Image 1 (tube, helix red, strand yellow):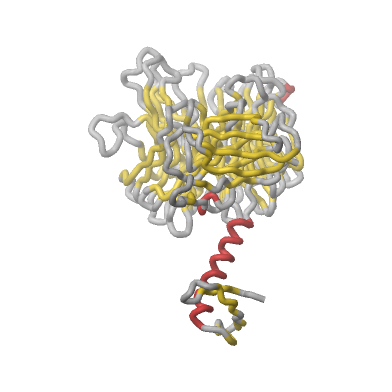
Image 2 (tube, rainbow, N blue to C red):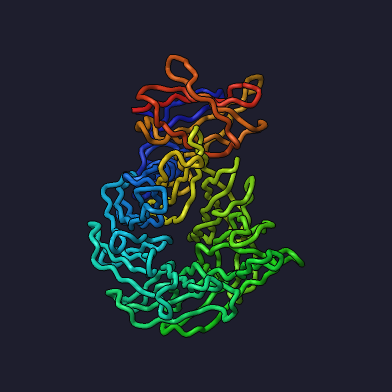
Length: 558
């Protein structure tokens, strides 16, 4: 048996049998230097096997609802639990239901449970990414019931999807207020903190309500936070419990209908003790740090983490003001900014797409053991929102990025709401798919990436082969292969030195051209729906704009 091969001076392969004692690391017979290189190869093989062993998937699901979207995901064991909102109609009359669901390791839904609003006439559900597993393997999430007399909600589900209890909280001052349960974190005594946005019936300002409950969700106390000015609004709080101290970040913005000339959007961060007392407050400036007159219009804060160096990292969007009247005068790009331990601005990163839009932001940042950062969010290309995964150095320098495009006639926007690390070193993300035309149902989007941010395993090691005198060739990586009918075929195009746009042609095994699409970028992952296709073998061709074939891949639908 040949364990390895080496080349002699005449470049001929020589069989080499090398028996290894793995306890001592020595060779029983064979040359030691060969074992040294072989050990390196074995390590690389093991690492490679670990990367390729990671499961990835990409699903769109609506579970029978016309309007549907996942709001939060929590990995547990070999599966996932999710919260979602679902409605039987795209119209306002189709009241949303609170959905709790379980998925297996491949992302397929095993079961889902629904809670309908009181009397069947109210919307109910968890809008924010706050699903969290408790020590007893039950799950807690904050949400909202709204329609007539709005309430913040706290849901407790067991691992079978049964509702253990549901608690509802009115605004303390005015039962006509709109109150939305946004932020959630655990208290050190086993209870919970809920951060809610309160919008009064006057519709001029809003404040933050922080509610403390016991372990069964019964209210113990509440505090309100925010500006006393009539025209400032604080909303969309995110909560974190760090060492017994509550960190709360929310958007603060000026609410003036008559003009956009002095419009402001800021972030405010509170450091709060276990009794609700404010220990420190930080408010971002209206002028972007490092500039003299650039306005800093910040979107809804999606995430805040304390980094290993004691600083703070905020995932959000940065806005461009439109010359139209409020309440929607700003479009956003995905954005991250870093503060040091003394709350001094350190660095920021903005991901620019073709154009900003209302939904764009980074949704989550994860600090790895080496202090590098993984950031997940959205970008707009060809006027449609796409998912992105970016790896940054501790100083915010870009190390690599992944972009996920949907191709095909559907032309759907893919919007991300939550991301969590998984036990195999990868990442699971969830969100919503919205059809631009409105012709197809809204769907939940569930996406699993490996540790390198690849949807198609091995996307980070795909190379372009350049052979003198021949055409440039690329290795198109597809996954899964075969793909199940109705699911996505995911394929990755590596970085190549040709002008865009590229083209992709899809043929059946008889050579009939079925589809032809323009690809806006190389070094990107594309998601091709197989809806409407039949089982069989297909050929995927990638061409440059001159029609030169750059790569060919065969795949099957089962």
